[in-house]
Image (cartoon, rainbow, N blue to C red; front, side, top):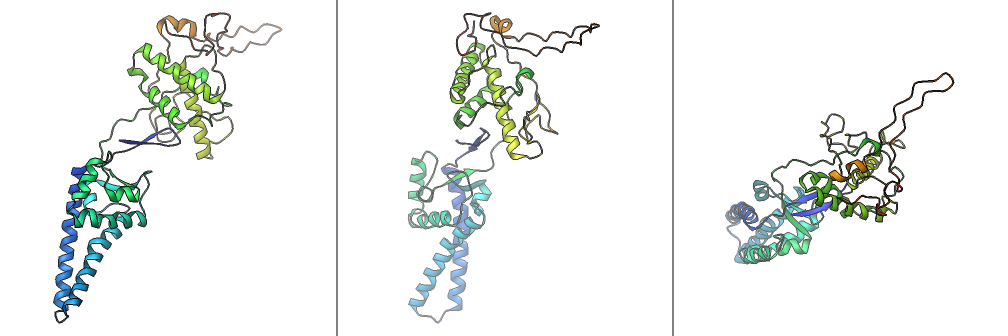
Amino acid sequence: MNDLVTGEAVALELRPAKLPSRALAVLIDMVVAWSAYLAVTLGLLAAAGSLDDAAVAAIAVSTFVLVLVGVPIAVETLSHGRSLGKLACGLRVVRDDGGPIRFRHALVRGAVGVVEILLTFGVVACIASLVSARGRRLGDVFAGTLVVRERVPTSRTEYVPAPPPWLVGRFAELDLSAVPDGLWLAVRQYLTRMGQLDPQVGWVMAERLANDLVARTGAPAPEGVPPAAFLAAVVQERQAREARRAFGATGTPGFTAAPGYSAVPGVPGAPGAPAPAPTPFLAPPAQQAAQAPPSPQAPQAPQSSQTPQAPQAPQALSKAEHPGRPATGFVPPA
């Protein structure tokens, strides 16, 4: 499987087609092409029975080039990589970057296919496909294309859990331009699978990813914030920025998604989609009490000369209360 990472740190999966499915697709195409070639040849010879041998040979060569070479090239170009055999087998020819092919790609594949498929009866194409890790023949190598499977079993999509409410919007001024796509993908994969990991192993992985993220952004992490919660909050901030760039309606300054709400359309949390179950970002048991933010103070009863006090927002614990905390801001597991 080949992964292409998009700007939203989503892995676009391309499943290369292997030799058996490709051979079946080529066999279907060849049966149709040779049947058409024989029918056209017999029709032309019957209509031009009084021609000499040179004219008959010219007609045969022209029919061979047009029917067995030109027609497959035209079909792949117009159908964007779906010939009759590939359509029956659920295959498609795409570029190396996953985009649709153009005439030049189909022309190179067809020209090289004359040698490796028609003239050698597919022996060269089979050997090249077996040697290639992605099942490509020589025509695909020269054209920069790849045959992929379109009909694949669908799997349940994993969603990034929402961060704690007291972290929403806290990283609005964070510079995320230097964070590479590979790190975003690693963070997203961790957040979607952290419930399946051992607590100690998951804590170490989250701390390492958070330190990498801090090194890329250049801003220190807040004190007393669990690394998994920090990662979820930063990912949500990136999704909110992507939504502001894509949709003008929600593109107001300071826009952030609410807890349990995903700023990217089409995922749970978006309008009309069910919100995923909240995932608690808890530290190991020995550290839960130390990392939990202080609860807001209840508003005091109004006095005769004073106005009611507003509830205080949760604040991170100071270093003085935990002198043994490392400089990263993440408490090590017990």
